[in-house]
Image 1 (cartoon, helix red, strand yellow):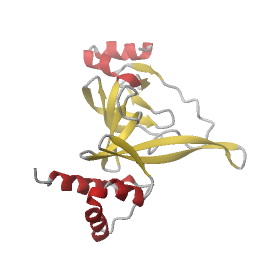
Image 2: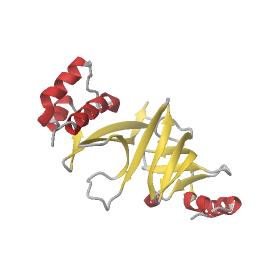
Image 3: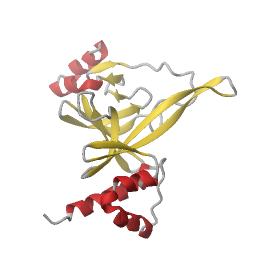
Length: 215
């Protein structure tokens, strides 16, 4: 733990702060690149952090989706890059919505790694991976710029499938394909690979059908 983190822990004089303030002081090394490396915006967002099975509500956090790291603003105004291996997950409150992120670690059986937004869980689970890349000299052939990528995955029968279009989604849900197709049509749901919320109602509906299968 960095010296700044220790100072915060001593000032709070609680074991909870020692658990939460586990990381190193952060500094921005990308200030010359247009845009920023964070999800939603560069400001800190209300949320919670879960570390070692303990959840800390009422935190100010921001997610660096370029480096896949979580930053925390301490009560002393220090910015910490939290020890990623100790973070189980976190939440973000943005635009009147709660975003729930889980840390998929390399020691799990899943092929996914890092922080992913969990949108739906059940017989089929929907995960979203937000990431950013740097486009070199993309502005006037002089300035680099951050660009965001959104990838969606569905886990079904223990298999992770990336969802890039409507056809892939319907093939994955083939055991209920016609019902799912009718549901999408009757509710005017259009697939958008840039908007994970366009898929969530479909996965939720599919899971509801699976729950109603007689034993």
